[in-house]
Amino acid sequence: MSRTYGRRSLVAIISLLAIGGALSIGVAKAAEDVTEDQILKALTPAKRVPLTRGLSTGPQTLPDPAAAAAEGKFVQSIRNRPTRSLSSAEREEIATIVKDKPKIDLEINFDYNSAEISARSLPSVQALGRALSNPDLKGSTFVVAGHTDAVGGEAYNQDLSERRADSIKRYLVDKVGVAGADLVTVGYGKTKLKDPANPTSEVNRRVQVVNMENKATASK
Image 1 (spheres, one colour):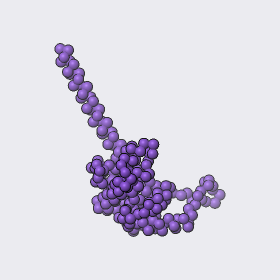
Image 2 (cartoon, helix red, strand yellow):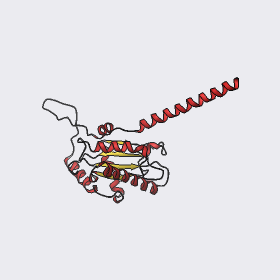
Image 3 (tube, one colour):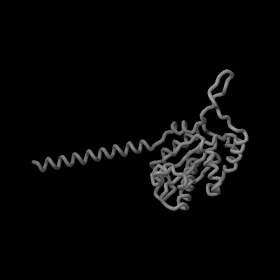
Image 4 (cartoon, one colour):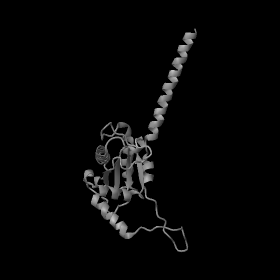
């Protein structure tokens, strides 16, 4: 009798563990998926409140026309460029420009040692495509930047990050219809870790999308 009870208890415990594991996997998957609305909000530039006579909203930094013109000229020069053609200096200039731009980090998983987007990440990439096609964003120039963790050599990670950025662009253009000229792809390998204190953490393996707010040079 005691042996039978013990077996039943063991089966019950194993069943509960299996159910708990399935639920935790479901929660983790749901947490990874990003929605079109979340992407849209993250990439939409903040509206500047116009100053009116007699109304003060505190100090505001107005954009420098000369700097804005130089930035626009640079963005124009890197549009329609192959990812691998960007020099290290150009990559760093992009990194400087995007610091203050609307951006979002997406956890896009790829097949092992590959630039193929994993099936579990397709919903996030599809949501990105819908967001970039939204009338509020459509026509802007976007940077799609690939990043890796610190595992492996610099050359290997640089190449992998570039191929993965290219893979995202190819999917957005071929499957969603986003204008290829509006997507600037760049790879940073392991040079710009999101969590430098944990260089091998998965949070460093990401794709960052940035709205360059440059509709003047974007395709119509």
